[in-house]
Length: 132
Image 1 (tube, rainbow, N blue to C red):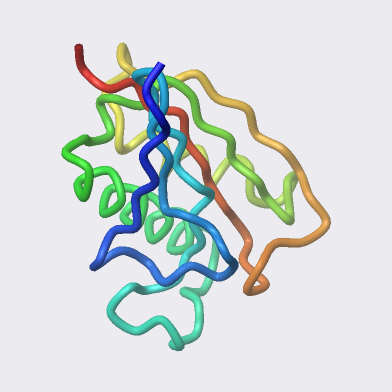
Image 2 (tube, rainbow, N blue to C red):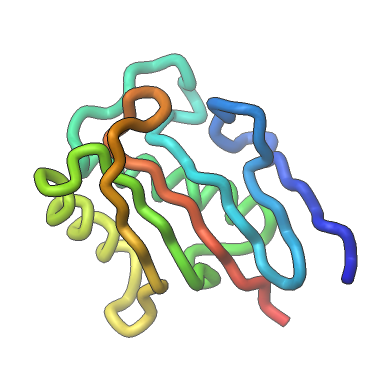
């Protein structure tokens, strides 16, 4: 087995803690949970509402994936964390599903949590399979 590759994407979202954007190991890429921060203005307030925050998170995930030559079609598993699970679950789902064809949606777990970094409403992390 080769050593893991640790990826920091130069134009990616600024990390809110000490971590790599993604770690590649054994043909998989593990993408750190992304927040709804704007990479072009990392100190700007977060977007308002779950729809805007979900879109920003997915766009940030796309930046990380593109930085290592991948895209959303390579996702095999996503974990979504919501601070207001019952209030935001349906609206988050509407945004999430807009990024994937109905027959190519990744496996997923959605978890209600008591808080997230930056006081975000949503965070999403990924497991991605590299093409052979």
